[in-house]
Length: 262
Image 1: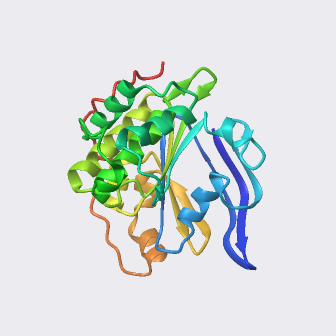
Image 2: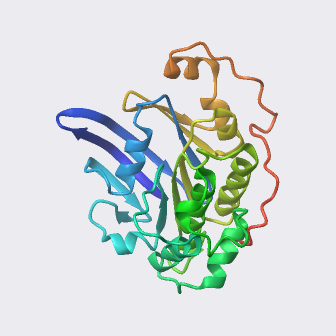
């Protein structure tokens, strides 16, 4: 479980996050939504130990602030909004970095398989810098998938995703959603910063709604995606279409070969 208690972040005397508390469970997708500047990315970066914070945050019982990075790398993989690559790596080499970070063998065949899963078959030898923005984003997603599996020897693993659908066309957005959903259904945990509220409704089990550095509401998709809450958070009149009776839309199944946890 991810457990966050009274987490606050300040930079140069300015409060970026204040008193954020929530829990997220393995086997579920937790989506973080809110307007620009509401603290979504700051929260995720604090959970990755990239930002100093006060309060407490623990992942699978490991204190995020004090646990060694190499230990955390075997529990969770991080997909940032942007990843700068300074060296002339190939797509396959980027994915193998994820394998090595997770303590796995840097298997070329496994890297090629993961690239195919994100609709980049045969891309392993391609120079990363020659790929489009959307292709680079999918290579980085494959790297994160290479690092962790839904459940390991010591329990569930996690994907922490910051705007994983940015720069992707709708077909590849749905592909990434299916893979993330499959990861959670197989027993892993997913925490994702999201902008598109329709896609959030398709993916999330739990939604965190941020505003001005505070968590103003959390709950299921029907509870959070309401006219009043969204209007309050985004400062514009929002009317939510009627949700299906079961509270969310269904994504088609992914080909990603994880077995559901028993």
